[in-house]
Every structure is written in structure tokens, then in C-alpha cells.
Image (cartoon, rainbow, N blue to C red; front, side, top):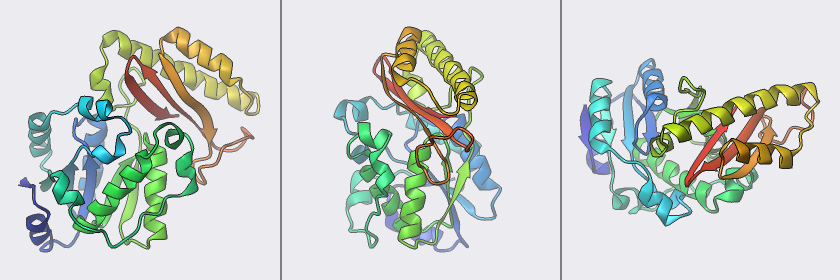
Length: 271
């Protein structure tokens, strides 16, 4: 595995290849990331993984500072997975140039996480746009856990007529149902148990919604989640995955989207 910290040296290297399969990460690698990398390796192109904790997508400085990091462990894992390239850029390497493409921010960016994390998706799309211009990947592998993010990146790529193609990958879960996330590293055993109980409560809720034609009382559900152990709930809403619009009729296909806090750790998921 070749490691790069300078975009110009990286570009010289990857110009020799037929194309790149790109897996963007902020490190703190887990089984969800491993699944993306394994999916990438099934394609005919070389796999490039990036590790960059992007400060511009954090709406709180304290959240950026406390975000779990373990670069040595990540590098060891990526070597074991026989990844071709690892790109660990500095802030200046990513933000020290003006991108050719302007960011397209779909109106759905104002909903769900966009409503509660001001500037978050602007930061995400900015950094992804820059990575795309540096790497020019054939494929970008993204997980469905961060579905709103995935949807907005796809919209930006379509609108900007970028040739890179998004490959949507299924959410990988712990044995207790909780979606793998770097933020899970901030939870102790008891807190993970709370997250598991919330997952199963909301899974059962989705089944009930389907039976009751989409009707559910948010205030009651939030009270129940607080009883289970959530500190705060940002949202619980059902959305159509294709057009990312709120679903009123439960006969249509939808996922239940939710974001909540256990102590100071914010978790998101959709089921």
C-alpha cells in the first residue's frame, strides 16, 4: 500500500492507472468501512482510501476535537486489506486551491440533519467536490447509513455532470442491531445497550406505522426514547428513498430516519 500526503505526488501516481475506486473516510475505521473497501475491490480498478477529518462539516468545534481518531490502527487495517493507495491530506492540501465545479446543494439539505447541523452538508459537499477534482475517481463507495449525505452527493454529481459514479452500499450492523459508526467508539457498554434498545424500538415502530397507514405521534415516541435512555432526539421522520420526500402514505416504500443523543454522542440511522 502506497501512502500519500501530497495531492500532486498522488496525482502523478494515479495517472498511470486505468481508473480509481474511491472510499472516502474520516478514519476510525470499522466493519462498515471494511465492507465498502471489500465492495470496491470487486471492481476492476485500484482502490484508494482517504482519511481526513474535515473540520468544515462540524458545526461544533468541540465535536471536531472529540471525534475518535486512531491513524496507526487505521493504517494497519488498510495494509491488511491490501488497499492500493491511502491518501492522508493536510487541511492546506485539500483547501489550498479553488475547485472548478461549484457546489450544488439540493433543497433537501435543509431537512433532517441539515436542520439540526447548520453548515454540515455545505462542508461535506465542499470536501467531496475537492476530493473528486484531485482524484477523478471512476467510482465512489458510500454507505446507506448516512443516506441524506449520499443522496446530496449524488445530486451534486448529477447537476455538475461529473463522470464519477456513486456505488450505494448497505448499512453494516453490530450484532445488537446498531449501525457501525466511528462515533460508537465514544459509547460504553451500557450506552451501547441503550442504542440497541432504541434500534429495536424503532424497528418495531416502523412495522406499526405500516399497519396504521403512516400515523404516529412524535411526542409520545420521543418520550419513550427518553425513557429508554436517549438524552435528546433531533428527529424521527419517514422518507421515500428515491425522491427523499416525506411519506404520508405507508403503502409506499419508506425508511424511518432518526437522530438522537446518548450523553454527548449523536447517532443517526435509517431503517
